[in-house]
Image (cartoon, rainbow, N blue to C red; front, top):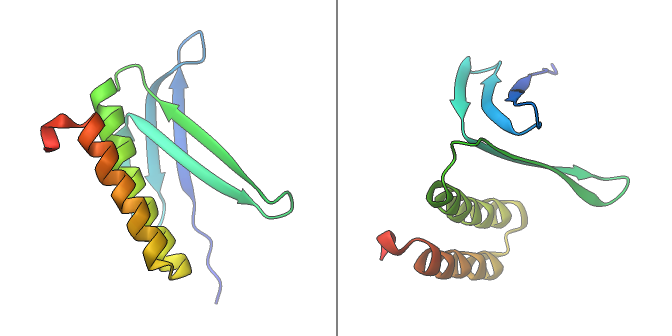
Length: 109
C-alpha cells in the first residue's frame, strides 16, 4: 500500500520579499511550528543538479546562523554516511564541522 504525506512551508514576507515569518507543518506527525530558517535541498535527477531553497527571517541572528550551519554540517555528515557507507569521508566532514565550530562558535571551546 502506498502513502502520500505533505510537508508544508508557509513564508510570510515583507514588501521587499524578505521573510518575516516561516511556519512548517508535517501532515503525518501533526507537527506544526514556527522557525527562523530553512535550508531545503532537492535533487533534480533529470538535470543531475541540486535545487535549493534557503530562507531565514529578519530575526535570525548571525550567531544563530553560525550554529545552524554547524549543526547542518554534522547532520549532512551523518546522512552522507548512512546513504553511502563512506565512513572515512563522513569523518572528514565531521572534522570540518569541528574546525568550523572552533572558528565560528568560540563558546563551544
